Every structure is written in C-alpha cells, then in structure tokens.
Image 1 (cartoon, rainbow, N blue to C red):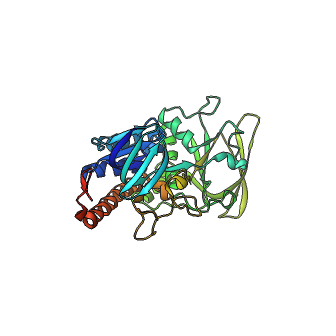
Image 2 (image 1 turned 45 degrees about the horizontal axis):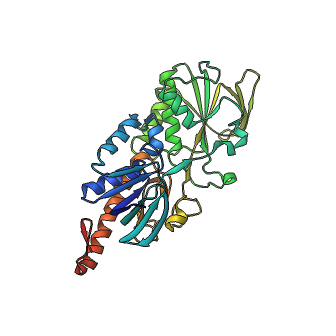
Image 3 (image 1 turned 120 degrees about the vertical axis):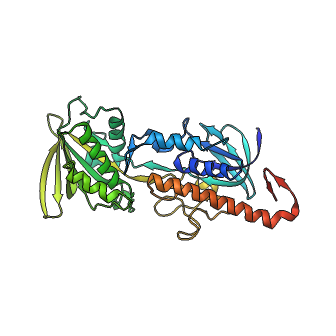
Length: 354
C-alpha cells in the first residue's frame, strides 16, 4: 500500500468537483481528485447542449479540465475508507493507495431516476418510450428517429418523471426538468421542423436567468404546445405508435393523444454511496445533509469534510460549478483557521503549517 503526502482530496470528477479542484489549485493547495469513472465530467460529459444558451456540454467540460492545473487525478477508483479527523484524515481507495488529507470534499453528484419504476409509462416495455438522457444522445448524433428508423411526426414529453411523486418516494422538485424539456423540444424542432411536440406538465418551473425567455420562445418561435395534464397510461398500438391517456387538468377533461415517441424527462436521485464510508448523514430526500441549510451549506456535520454540487440536492450546471467554487473557498477558510489555531506547533503539513 503506497502512502501519498497530505493533500485536499476531492471525491467526484463532475463539474462541481472539477470546479472546486481548479479553484483550490489556484489558491495554492495540493489536490487529489478521485473519480470512479474512466473519464472526468460526471453526467455532463454525456450531454449535448445545455440550457438556456445552448452551450455545448463538451465546452464546459473542457474549460473545467483546463483549470485543474497540476491536480493529481485518479480515475477508475473508489474510496473504500476514510478514517481520522481534520487535518489528519486517511483516505484509502480501491487501488490500495492511502492518501493523507487535510480536508475532504464530497462531490459525488446524482443518479438519473430509473424510469422503469413508472410502469404506466411503458419504459423498457415499448420501444418508443425513451428517457430524456437517451433523447439527448440522439440529438447529439443528429439521429432522432423511432426505434424502426422512421422520422418523427408527433412527440410527447412528460415532465417530472420521478420527481414530485409520492409513489416513488421522491417528493422534491428536480429543478432542471422543465427547462431541459423546453430546451430539448426546441432542439427536436431544429432538427425536424415539421414535428409536432406536446409537453405534458404539472407546473412549469423555470426560475433561472434566461429560463422564462426560453419558455416563451419555445411557444412563439417554435410552436411547441404545453398541456397541463397528467399521463395516466401509455399503450402501444399495432404500428408501434403510443396511445396516451391524459387528463387535461386546466379544462378538467380526459384526452387521448397518439404519438410516435414518448420522452420521459427523468429527475435526479441522490447518490449517497459514501454515507457510511465518510460518516455523512442523508436527508429524507436521500441527498447528503449539510451542517446548516442557510449559512453552512457546503459543510457536513463531520468537521473537515465538505459537500458540493448535486451531492446535496438537484442543481443546474451553473449552480453546481458555483457551488464547487464556494466549497473550495470554505475549505481554504477552514484550513487557514486551523493553521492559526495550531501554528504554535510549527509542524509543516504540505504547504500548510499546523
């Protein structure tokens, strides 16, 4: 087992983790970034373009990678043990390496909701019932077609799949689904101008800068139709199209809609796999609990272990990046304070004195 010198360890190589690592390096700290995937970027590395300005996701990943500036990156590894306390943590990873850490940042992101849990939508049963993640891959490769390769004429997009849903024990809003639906609907129209698109929603929640304008443009410039209604059932017809039974909650009447493709806009699920390893608490929403929701939202209850990005709840990309950089500042302040407290000991730890 090889032991590495004391560092700040960042667990998770998504946008929040990379943003934090880059900022910590700019502050002059030695950083080890650990990610279980073989490629940095988290969920975002698989995406096409992002709202509200349609920036290519690869541009964001490239920018954040460029800011790592000497960060030691360990890919394809998981954290198996965290012992000790700040500033003397011992982090053991699946490769057998032991890393001495003055502080730790957990930025392990989220998991997409498993659409198969909503059986009434036919995901995994009907070929033309897909998720927003699968649609994004189609858009990225300019191949948005039915399972049999036919051009789409009608598409229905279902908001809030796996979010705000007591039946699957996810009562929270995933925050990005509405705007992502609008963005993807516009992208379909750009690639297939004659396609009719129906967005079935509970409530439209577009809260960020430029989001409301995007919503308005989708209707005025792209002709996308929004129906406030709940999808009760989807059935496959002999020609593989899908018959949807929907309750229009604005007029209080049921309606039927036949479409070539049904897109399930899946929400975010907490990724709390490190809760036992890191000694972190998890809320009723299964995301990590912070030390205080208002004024200490990057700190965990365990001193010296910090949190960032969607590890603590659903966030848009720009929020996750900002949160990662905020966590880096919190860590720098924490270590500076420890340095002041223990400076009389005169012990050199990395580039810090304790």
